[in-house]
Image 1: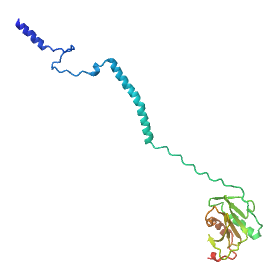
Image 2 (image 1 turned 30 degrees about the vertical axis):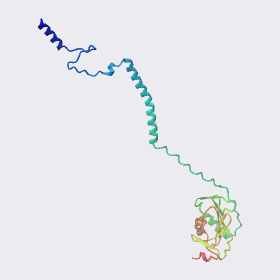
Image 3 (image 1 turned 135 degrees about the horizontal axis):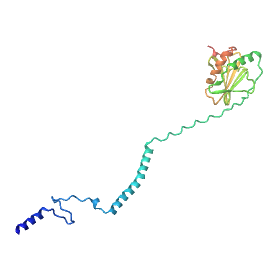
Length: 228
């Protein structure tokens, strides 16, 4: 009888013990930590997932906005529109009023030859029509720079200066609104009236000097300042 009791007790010792919640006790007496998620009630799990989804929905637009702002700062700004060129002042193309005194046969011939040699533009000034004497007068630009052939040669005081431009001797006379340059070494005088707004008048007569050399012979009493 004692042996049977002893055997029964031994058998009981060999069986794994049960824990308080009814689960078998591990043989090594060490229990794995319980999974909190497994123990969490179903309602709480849905609440956690809902909160996570809401946080994601809120964070996504904010992240997108930050990305857009960062891109706009890092990306080069649109090139500024090229400044529109300053509108050129509208220049008159109307005929320029000029006198046309009657010329003797020789000066008339010389002037026609000169007009045929004049350029269509002087620097950036286009040629314009004239009201009278197109065979002896020409005009360019607005305000008009004018060329008159066949007029009287000026009387030059001894103290006045003269200038040679492209082998043509010019005398300068100042007016209120213009400088008038007149040849003083040619058989027929040529006068060029240059408005005050055009600076350095001698530079404007350079292309006219070339036409004078090609069509008007030297003559008259050449001033000492223009003699070679």
